[in-house]
Length: 471
Image (cartoon, rainbow, N blue to C red):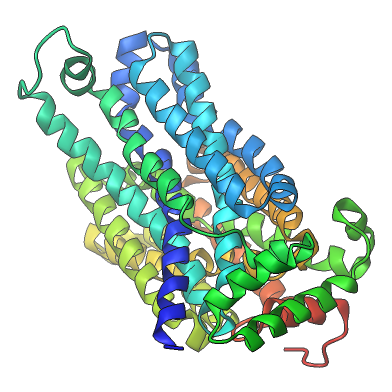
């Protein structure tokens, strides 16, 4: 059999699942271009405006809380289909709603799609990818998120341009969405990638490892034969999955009573929530305000933020190319060390920068170095590790627990960063972020094995103590 054929097929499956990451990024970022318009449309006060911005997070927490269990029961593919439907319903509803209350409900529905896809898409990729390329293929999901952010910004910009020109007749729905109330078009454009995601999901198979766990051997063999070069290799993978699964006789929550399985779940929770307290979301969400505190004008601050976004995308591409060659832990050692240094330098800038004669360009360089170090390490690694470090039987539930921790951390950072900036100042805030890098580095160093190049069954054997390779 032509060896290129299965590799291209695996890439197709991975790219399909990664479209969920694009929807994640788009749905998260598109809100930034609509806040002012929606606030004027519905005459929102400050509390209501905050609810509009943050309501999707409630949906995300709900989605991530049930996604793992649903994926363990129904299968990874069905839950991705459900998430695509939620994105589509949210986009269409936001475009045509006539009340603020309904708009919030539709945003929560979209948030549930975000929560589900943040668990199931990287998990599906990890279960179809060969060990040699698993890190790079799962990292496609993180890349898709950054591209989704960029796509939302570009769509918002283009729709604002179009809104000044009369493409559609008055008193029509399209005129309302594109011209009169363009925020509807911004939110509604998510319907296009959502429908695309839904359609291509019907062209991919269920995860073969899920099929084995659920005693669907014939279906699993069919999928594995598409992923590997021969029937012999396909049967070998089925045997490996069945043998490893047989070592864990309990199911779902019962498995957490086993200390050997509870351990990686707790470590996953720790790195998921700690990663949010190392500053990356504060920079991405509050960057313009932080730049303005350095003395920049609003326009320059937004330009600097665009530069931050571009570095984030380009560095994620680099991480995707090297993560399987360099290894997960080495990327973390390099990147987090750079994060600590750049965060400390940013803190020094806000304390002594003026007396040292540092310009705003120095702040931009420090932020770009920080984003580079973040994108090449914790941002690229987190979904890879979480998708591969758990036993097959409990992978969905364990990823839901870790994902729930990640979203709680995201919520807390979003709520606390303005308080930090007001009470600790930028200098104290970035010093705090630097300190939070230390426990993250320790856990990766001492508690997490290197997973690059290992099969999911090998990683499971490590946690269960049946593998002698304690990397």
